[in-house]
Length: 331
Image (cartoon, rainbow, N blue to C red; front, side, top):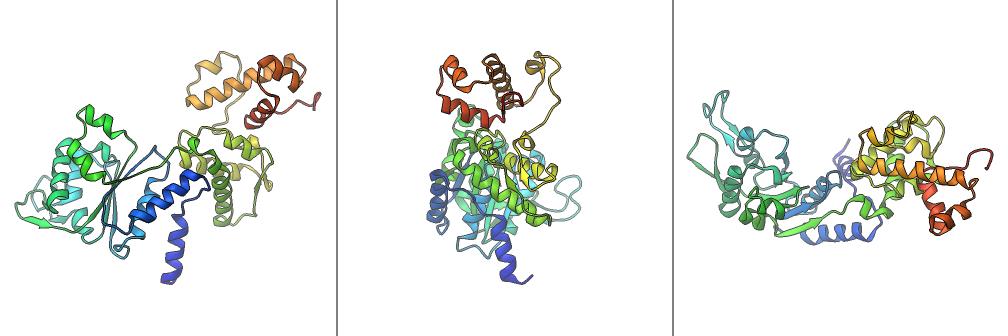
């Protein structure tokens, strides 16, 4: 693969998909701040795409041909994170058989993404603050200062204002990192992006796995748009890929899109005793309730809507979202 093809493939891999106003705002913010040297704090729930935003902040900057190094502050034990960031000298600690540069040295003239910055140990926060203020640090076990030129982008799924109140995060570090904030709304806050993302993930899966193209049934996208997706885009992607795997034909039905299919309840009590995400339990409870109410009124949607004191159109839409269909005698 030549360089241009590799670049195009990488950009496609990091595409930010969505037609909502909130997604367009994020893209505009990226264009505004990427060419500058400003530090950016990316906030949002897990699975919303914070790493994609960081990629484009680097890719559209003057440092785009320099290193882009990512480090997850929550994935590395706190006793090892200092060495990962700053490097260490031979003999600095047990097991340090050789000197080793840290991520900051390796990223000199480039960009560092500090993911899950809200999980960084407070002692290490103080050392990071010094780097932001002076551009200098020492390897673990050394007194010799090293100077680097790096742009720091940070990301977190935590509310740092609350962490500051709990004395888990330094307020001065927060202000140093939060020169420019990009907040990524949860997927449930931009449901108009769900059909676009779902089609993209389905087309991508089929293309990458060499299978014939598939499409969604007419009510499947309505169903998806009504889900909360606590795992956000990551959860949606996994759900679409699973649906493509279990669907032998070329049309994805609603039945293939239930997040974690489970056997039918042997008793109504299981609806309350089986542990699963609250959003899933809420949908299951509502589905059982609506099916029972519809059965009471011989699946007459108009009559049921009147008795439930809701608009018929709203009830019909919710039935589609929950995948409720009239049984054969009434269909």
